[in-house]
Structure formats: C-alpha cells, structure tokens
Image (cartoon, rainbow, N blue to C red):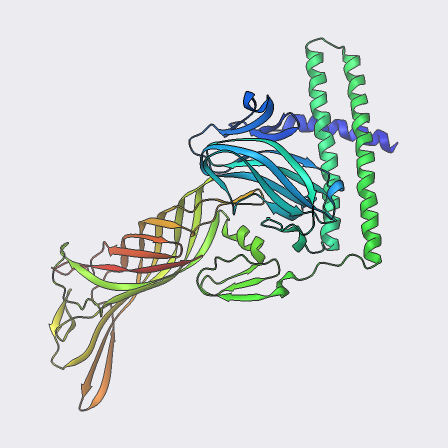
Length: 531
C-alpha cells in the first residue's frame, strides 16, 4: 500500500513539475565531464583533438562574450571512499590564451552541501595571460567524514583555457596542502549540522528522482502525440517508470536513514559533539578596515562601521549583500563663493571648516556587476565660517552683513547645522571575489567615484563670539535664523580608495536668502565610509 501511495505521489509531482518548471539552463556532458550551460551562455565548452599529443582528448573553455562577471568550469564529482583520511594531489596540463583575470585547477571536499572541508582553486597562485602547456598541481587532505570530492578547471572572466590528463593520486601525508581551506584544519562537524545535512540529502534524492521521472513522462507524452505508442501503452509506461523511481527512492533513502541512525547512536555514545559557540575562539577590536581573513572561531568588533562579524563567512555574506550600510564621517575646509566667482574670501581659509556625520546605504544596481551603486542616507552637516579682520555678522532687516566689532575678538565663528539626505550614483571598481565556487560582490574594496547631491533642512544657526572684557574672558552665543533659508540643497562628489575619499560639496542655495551679494558654501575635505 505504501509503495502504491509513493508511485501516485511521484506521478502527480512529475505532472506538476512539468507545468511549473522554468528551466534557465541545463547540465551538459563532455565525455565523463560535466558543465552547466545557461540559456545565454558566457562560455563555449568543447572537446578538441591535437596531433601533437597523438590525438589525445583535450577539453577547452572559451569565453564567447567580451565582458563576463563570473566564471565557467568543467568538473567531475566523485565519492571519496578511496581517499578518506588521506592526502590527495590533483595534477593536470594546462594551456591558456589571453586570460584577462585568471584560470586554474580546483578541487573541493564537501560534507554534503553544508560544509566545505577542504578547497583550493589556485586563486592565490593563478594562471594568467598567455601560457604554453605546463603541468600544475594542487594538494588537499580529505577528512574522514567527507561525502564527496569535486574537481575541475575554471576560467574567470574572459580568455580561453585548454587542459588534459587531469588525475587524482594519493600522496604522503607530509605533503603540504595548497588549499585556501585546508582539510587538516577541519574541525569535527557538530551533531545538529550532520543531522540537517542528511535530512537535506533525503529531500534531494526525492527531488532528483521526481525530476528524472518528469523528463521520462515528457518523452512518453511526445511519443503519444506522435502516435508512436497508444494511450494504453503510455499509461502503462508511466506506471512502470514511476515504480522504478519509487524503488530508487526506497533504496537511496534507506542508505541515508542508516547513516542517520548511526549518527544518533554516535551521539548517544559521545562520539559526536553538539554545536559550540564558535564566537568564543577569539575577539578582534578593529577601527577602520581589516583586510586579514577571520578564522572560523573569531569575532570582529568593528568600531568604525558599528558592526560585529562572527567569522569570515559571516563577514563575506554581509559585506556582499545587495544593500549594505556604512557609517559616514567627513571633515575639511569650508568657505564661500561670492556671486558665483572665486574671490578673496572674507573668511579664514584654515579656521573655517565643516564636518559631517551620518549613515549611508549602498545598493548594487546590477545583478552580476559591481560597477554601479545607488548611495543614499541621512547626515548631519556642520558648516563653520570664521570671519577675518575682527568682524562678525549683524542682522539689518532682511540683510545680514559682516561688520567690524567694537571689541577686540579672540574668536568669531558662524555655524549652520543641517539635516540632509545625500544621494549619489557611485562607480565602484571592486572586482567580484570568488570563494568556494561562490561569487561575492563586495563594495568599498577598491577605487570609488560618487556623483550626486543632497537636500535637507537647516536645523539651527548660531554665532559664537569670544573676547576679553576687563580681564574677564567672555563667550557670547547668539541663536537665530540670521536670514538663512529653511532649506539647503547642493551638489557633491567624491573620489577615493576603499574607505577614504576626497570629498567636494557646494551649496546651490545662498547662505543668506535675501542678501544683495550672494554667497554659497563650498567645502573640500576627506570622507570616510566605514563599511
């Protein structure tokens, strides 16, 4: 009865999958190698023969677009049974032409799809440019709890690579590993992770068999439409195919259930540990940017960006989200442009300054390109002006004039405080980063250029005068609007590297709205976007 129910469910699922599926690509094979080919391919994968090598099989990956953000690969996946607990060397001969980014051998050791136990893709020792045939090698240790080994050759960005004679061999355990993730550094996988992985594998088996049945039913329906078979034959074939896949599910799932039972027994026997708080392995307090990789048990407290990262994987994931946040601080010189011309200023060049504090959001505009970003947020701007020649501002009706003060001033300062909403189109030239076959689109890692502006409201205006009166030091603070406008708006731009930029902003609104002589704030300084 249970088998009948399973066959019925499989048939219904196959029909529903046929209706709803929207495949965007397919897996293809060259000999016993596999590659994924999207509907609009970035690469051409093919087999070549070369008389120089006695007609040996040579595989090649060739870009077919002028610009590609990502990589293409030809690969194999095998069971690790022969290599468990041993050190494995992958070797092969590679030739490349006009490689814009890099190419290389790669190998990955997995525990199902939840943990990468060991990995190397030659990213730290890449093959670039144009190279003739040469032999390359990478070495990984395969932990005893591995469930699969995947390996192949990848091409990042554009160019063409040829490869042949790819082989795996067991080497002495004293051979150093080349991997970014080393198998000998692998720590025991906790019970919860193992149990979840086995559960996911059971789901994957069921899904895979359903998809295989769906394709077979599609072919049966085509044969029926073309009158190759009758309706009765089609119905009989569908039932037989469903029975085969139901049996496959039974046999494959039973293997995973045995593993799960053994895992539970190991847990009872104390051979498998519960998940531990990996954050207890060390804490780093950082101000600014940290280019060093975090260990899996390290926590980074980044004071400047007001963020906490629990290990490198957490940091990579959060910094490569479509939208990230930054703490913004800017400071520098502030002055005015009078009637649209650069003239001798009434304000001290070094004594007049600005600073800005805020939060910004950075949203990547393209799915597979890191170039264009929308940068927006909220900032508080402080613009300070220090008049020269013992002068201060005085309001006369709707005019605000600089007048000589009758008392000798130790300091004269005029401050505007505004709440603004900056908006920039940012060009970020940070290249995508590939780790463990996954592409990360991080920002604020290279040269950045921003073009845009800001708009907001004036919060307050204040004049501060300091002087001595009969040997007494006095500070006089006057608050009011001083005939300044209620709103502020302007243009701004910046160019920089990583977190630091040269920052220029210009108020399009005049400092005093009704003055006969129009003066506009202009600021130049350094801007820090702590990501």
